[in-house]
Amino acid sequence: MTGWSDVLITEGISVPSASDVAVRYRGESGAFVDTSLDRVSVDDVLAGLPVREMRWFAGRQCYSGWYWSATTGGHVVYESRLELARILLADHDPQVVSIAAQPFWLEWSDGSRTRRHVPDLLLGRADGSVAVVDVKAAYRLDDPKVARQFAWTERLAHARGWDFEVWSSADPVLLENVRFLAGYRRDAMIDPELTEAVIGAVDEPVPVAHLERSLPGMGEAAVIRPVILHLLWRGWLLADLSRPLGGATQVRLGVVA
Image 1 (cartoon, helix red, strand yellow):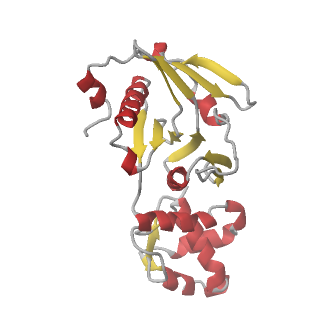
Image 2 (cartoon, one colour):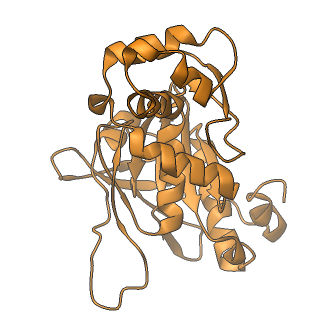
């Protein structure tokens, strides 16, 4: 499929303009705001609260909760393990500067019925671009109802000048590495002096174990390794995360902010 919007083209369905699409979101205060897609403030949505309340009850099938994001400095809600995985990748991505989960309700009419949808994520990037993300298990993507919903959402996102992504999976080794590195994501747990020393010691690609041994005056390997892992999380050090991490993993300098 070249684009989800092809579903609408095939079925001959027209798409409303952004001004005809209603948007409801919750601001920082928790109050609901009603507007239209062409007028909605991205900054307000990204700084706001989830538009949909999450409820826990006995027998609930979904695995849901709150994830503390290093990007936002606050908690981001997730409604499934799959959503949590996508949030982890967004939090690790240095190009992503803001994350909102369950960001807004979209409501529009296709002429025969009123359609409503809450995308899973809204991502703000450092270059000013915005992405609407829907997370769905791969086995459900062939469902005509799901395909039609994504087709509508893609068209509406593009009408506002936003990107649209349907995410179902990532390389399992990459995802496991990012999940592991997320344990070292908090800046407050890392000594800035050690951070500078580690970065200063990487003038060419070097194995993690060798890097640890090259800083004997800064502490034992058990002290240095968390710093290396934190820098890998932030992207200040880079490594091939498609392979299992270990002492032999080669690291190199990334972009240091």
